[in-house]
Image (cartoon, rainbow, N blue to C red; front, side):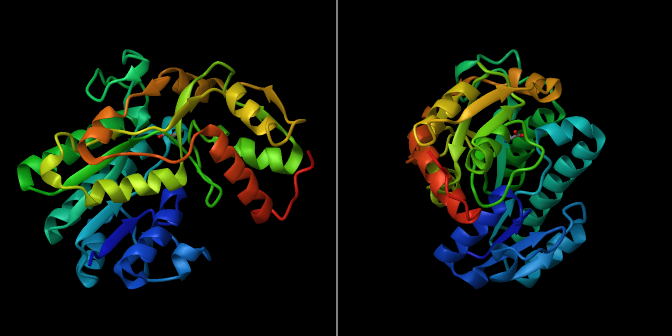
Length: 320
Ligand code: SER
């Protein structure tokens, strides 16, 4: 049975991944860590340790204390925050990744870290972006992600660490809010739809980005980590996406359930610039062929589930 250490376990992905892994592998087999503790289920339901990812010594100590055989490194700044604080982003995103890889090497653990559609840039083919293509991102986040992919591959080739990664699109969920990402509008819009029946988007109409519903993202992580390593031609990292839409299309999907829903625009130039540098839609063929990537949720199925779950979470009923 696996023993998994997760960094950034109380973040957007970690909050749900921790619980899902505890269901599969057993509560005591999943060690959640983050820079501070809160009262969330992930923090309270099983082993939890404070870990600052810029502190290698404490990460290795915790990994040894719990005899972990898998490290999942999620702690990182998202694109808009990284762009606002580039030096801090470099230190946290790259320093944290280096320490997490070193920890995995030290305790001989399998390793996962997410990359992103942010690893692509304006010179990348925008439609059906291939697995192997031009990667010249113009954001600090993208620079971190490309460097991170290369560093993860390096640890595999140089030290034999079983590193694996996914280039995630915008992830949408109702459990923990993302913070400081460019794709966050696609989460906020559902909260505002339930609360107020309208949303003002900071991303302009006609801006297409890849997205995925969190349950599909969690399954993808688990499937990739369970996959036969000898079949993986790529490791760091695989394109994965299950939908691509612009703000008008997500608004139209919400209108199927809330006919009076209204969208307006007040474009944020900083986040729009980041979005404009990313692909419209990426091609997940390599992930499908090499380890069987699949997904359950398209836009409308996700919209229905998000609106149902948020009504329960916010104790509000939408009037249609
Ligand atoms: N959701 C991320 C962001 O917007 C993309 O990887 O920063």
